[in-house]
Length: 320
Length: 310
Image 1 (cartoon, chains in turn yellow, red):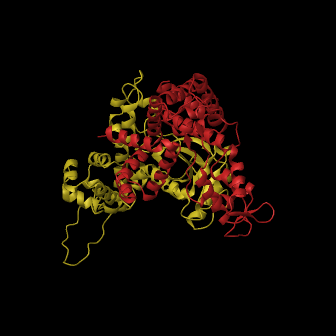
Image 2 (cartoon, rainbow over the protein chains, first blue to last red):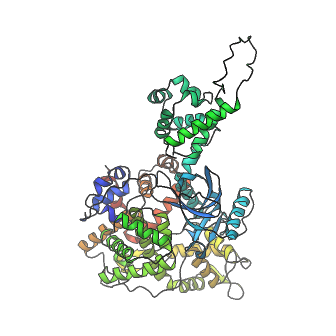
Image 3 (spheres, each protein chain N blue to C red):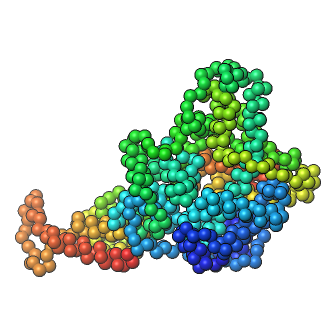
């Protein structure tokens, strides 16, 4: 939770503007009671999703990264990127805390001394990358990627690593725990979409995480619980079973960020479960003998077309 | 400054242009409001009192040293998409600048204290040319570069730094006697070393900058013997302490006061137990700067946190 400035907590209407924050923040609530109200009036600000750059993040770029729950940007180097996600390395202005798992960047690189916590690299959605603010030299980009590869291979970071931690009394260990906790907010939109290769089980996991029962949710979405359960189990085709409007509502209700990665997962659900029946071909009605396996008559072109169509419609409705 | 003006200013700073006048005005407002409303104790002032002149001097030095020379303005602007976030980050930067200035002013006599301690304390003895060692744990001379020296210094754990003694009307040393003793002993357990090497370890571990002229403290300032003034000082210190805490630190402080265990508190706050111990040390550091006032301030800070959130 990030707090308003003293300037703003001193404003005459601070209690009403920050009502929601004050209800959950001991520190600011106590401060507002103590500070003399000034004449300044504040305008409530909304935390809408900022518009991201028309450009896509590419390796070697330094970008600002947005997250739904925090009002400040993370500045990070992009180590790798696809159309849906980017592997980033945070760049933190805390240079003196560097350990052997961090790379120190002197002020000549970014304009200020910074620390690149290699151990804290992770993925974000491309929709979270808001604006490019710098470009690393080819040499430095290669060094940081090399440091990432070395660290996750259990090897020593060669270039500009910080001073090693040699026992558990070192206060930098606690600082790393706090950094990891703080960075989680930026990684959550991507990590929420992990755990399965298609959307249904990912949604089921998220629903469980939030403690929402399946039946009220499916009824709220206008889908029969059995059908929704089947979708969450990775056994139902959303193209046939989940209308786009219901899917969009589910995405919002469960707190997912609208993203290309989510669309790809939805397409995977269709690809995995669509029956691929060609509407132009008559349905086979032959009876199967007990114990026999149904011969696959899936038309891959039909399956792919359904996935593309569902993905395009979902992307459009999500505003992507 | 309006939000729209801020966006224009931010774009120009991100393009690496000079900070516009409107931004300097906003910074002046941030410094002035922080000092006048957040109860920053007067010993943080370059003159020992918060006059307009002192505020202007802090503003000018902060902008020159931190925002421009060290590039913090760019760092802040990149991370602050809106005016509200900029103000919060700027306040943190000013506060840290003032704390570091105080630390720098107190480091001037550190070398003398280290040398005196080594020469006068019977637990230390000279071993060869200018090297010191522990009498009961003789050691080979420390071998290693600055990185090894710094790693050894970090391995000694957390230290509480800077103490303010309002009753004595003076700033006490960067590390108090016990903490300096712990540092010296801990370093000499890593190997025999010279006083200059120990000083280098201190400089690196506590990020002590080059020595600056010692701050002149107004001898008329403060004092525990004048009850109303002391009460006013305490009230300011409570506000300053609340302002310096983060939301998570405030919650940790309340949890610790209620004797909730670290792991339970971590569960309640949705963070790791390592973060709780880190925040606990940050709180100790904030309280240590209050010196002998810490117990009284802490009590009132807790009162404020409980009363206003009852």
